[in-house]
Image (cartoon, rainbow, N blue to C red; front, top):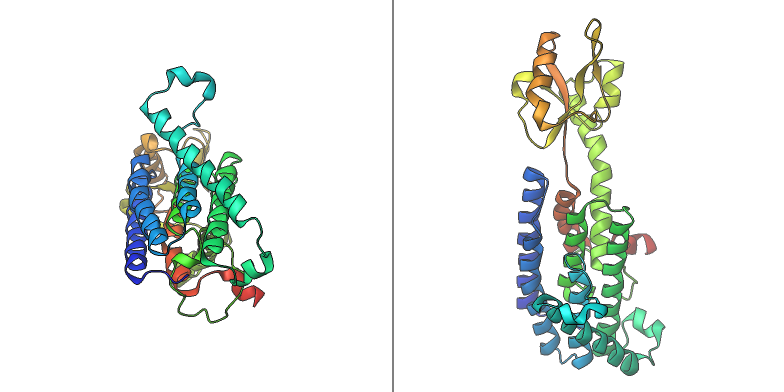
Length: 323
């Protein structure tokens, strides 16, 4: 299946806008409202349904969209409890209908596409309807994997998981993304787009440390042995230039009142917060400190936003390794 050019452009524009707004909010306030993800899920669902209809994907594929929405809803709502059916409100009734339609789509698809040659499926040689249904099923499993990782605290950020699940709703498979500019190998197995996005973001997160270190070296802030342990994740700033915000002051006054000493912590102390921000600065000034190491909070959601660029240009990073 070739993605519709107009819908693809609209979809990509929307996911970039959605992720930019979320990343900016997470960077500035360290939070993203749940309503943000719910609102952007609406156009994601509409575009996905339109593309399914335009490609004559069949009722099973259309109904399976509800299964994806049902899994997405787990980020915000509890699964309706059948034992309390009499107490259900409109919210529970709506969710139950979404669940029923989604389950019906999976059951119909299982009957219709169970006789599938999986080698041909991986090679992209099955019918469009077959490949779309199996890729939708893969998208559902991908969403559930992200949610499980969140529950297990493997991915601690709720906003990060909601973003990845929403990206899966926007792009259930590579069939909904234009062929990557620098990806020329056909019939290569690729992991789902949202998983590839997670890998690109993870790689960017890992590369951030040496980049921060080199920038500190270039500014001449790495001159003593203790600086080496700090320069990987923090930057040195004059006290007058430090303002309250999404950051931690890692240079602190420790010890007793009789014998205070200045220390640089790799991680912020448990008592470090906005409430005692001014107090920490005053104590450092009283010790004659002019500069302090400051670690800026870099939410993973910011890396997910920037990872959209290599995702669209290069696709799946694992595919290059397999090649």
